[in-house]
Image 1 (cartoon, rainbow, N blue to C red):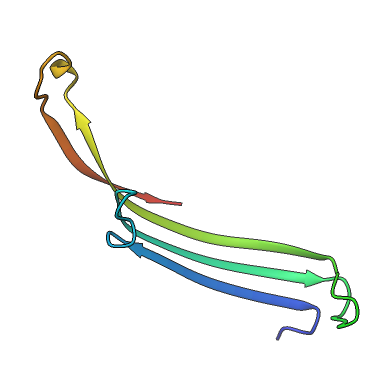
Image 2 (spheres, rainbow, N blue to C red):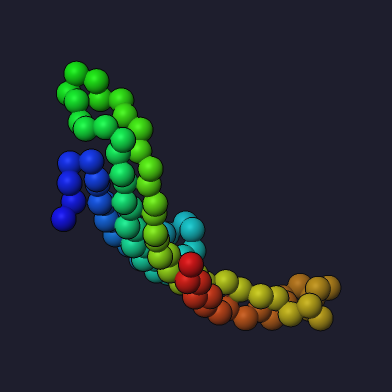
Length: 89
């Protein structure tokens, strides 16, 4: 198990079209896992300490984009295509 010189943190974040009204994104999920190995024990009189850490994360974004037909550049009402982009990092 984790000892008093180690720390493990997890976090989860999400978003949907109601939260991203102005950004145009449809959906987002993020999961984060962070591990820290401290070089000295916690001391309430001296909270400053150094650590070595590593972080893993997964980020997924579903975004709505639009493309205009390149042949319609001089047209007053160009045809466009709306499509979704799903990005996983």
